[in-house]
Length: 248
Image 1 (cartoon, rainbow, N blue to C red):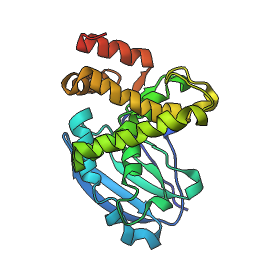
Image 2: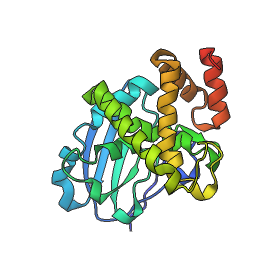
Image 3: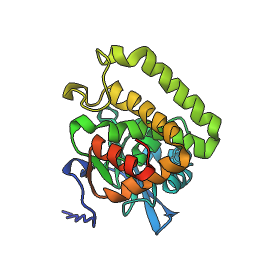
Image 4: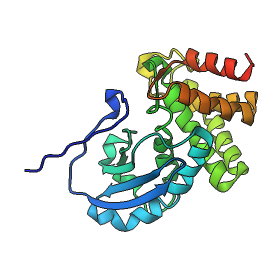
């Protein structure tokens, strides 16, 4: 019998805590972060170890993009642990549950693990105050799927990804969710629907355009610090950015 103990120095909502068991192979790395060296752990099926390097080839670059825009990585470790596909991906703090299907050996699922990584800031460092505020977690993470592309592949890649997502929102979101909704106050049966994710990402993109990059990214860094390891509502974000930027 083996007994394991885990400890974190940070406050976490209980839904971000998980333990995963199985026969895993560990591959480790280190990221030289803004404030500290961050260990990286990849726990895969033994048969998938040869795919790890190709799958996560841009992990450190993506970490650099997010740190430069949002501040230092907020937890002790970057971790990804493989899980059966039916469970999907889940942004458990410092140890993302990531489906075996994402271990492709290529960059085809890069957007997926970038989405989960961005949750360390949006969802984990600052958690949505209620289910009705879920766009603060998921909408921002969807937008981060485009932001990391801008940092690695250039501005045009950001624009193309955002336009593709906007097309989906205009054509499908109101159909998928059965109506037009604001991103805040969404019915709880749609907490994980397209309005929260896809329209939420468009609202974040629009907010960036409305404020301009200097005020937007400066305000986001300050917001994440103000509410660090706590929760915030849509109104908290609105009021904070209004005060920070001087723009209503």
